[in-house]
Length: 366
Image: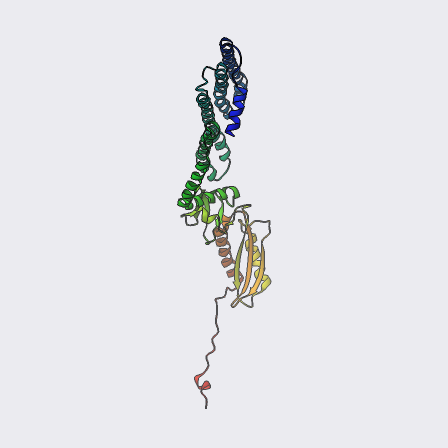
């Protein structure tokens, strides 16, 4: 690739015919023209692009236009100097070095420009987008992604300078970078696992800040924060549970809040055998129907689920608005059951066992 570029430049910039004075005059004309064109480009940026950018309600477009203005201006001037030096044929002995130094300067100029634009994006655009989300992962990822992108820009820029401008084979550098990357990956595999776990949670969004969830281990709590490496959950005892993202991203999680916060609460109530089933059903239904926290839609229901060892077991099914009301609704319904069963004479049985004791004399053979 580098040989092709060199051949093209040699053909395009071969020493022109004519006297030294004419070549010098043409070189000065080219240099002067490049300065004029650079001034026109700068004027267009100043009077047109920056003017219209200032009319918008955004700040980042002004910053991007300002970041591109100077590199374009200098690029035009460097290009004019490059062509004018070739035209004079004054520096044939050093033309190769001067060409490479000039091209290297242009590459460095645009590497700096890209770094400035990257800074503008991560400090003026992306933060506004991440503030609209409820998770903290994207906010914490921004500095990391900004740094990684800076490294990529500089790395690719240096490789381009070495390969395109100076004709240096960069394949060994890629091999060295691959070996170094493997070493870093092995050394920091736990941190990388946590990082990618956080990224997977961010994009998949199985839960967000404020959701009530139940972990595979049975712990229930409210998501306090989703970070790059860990997720923090406040349990019902007001204790903070900190779980590595690599674990929670590969575990079963029950989300009680999303996609909707309404949830069903099931309670089991046992009454003594011989009780009037319809009477018990009516009392239980009236209790849950009149409880404030129980939603009217979907409608609550009472069912005779099974014949237990010591009782007739009824199931109470109630829909509530928020999972945070679950403990409160169970307390309210149990309190009302104790009160109403006492009024109606409905018995709540104790577990019973019947023992048959055989007389020793009856079991002794004659």
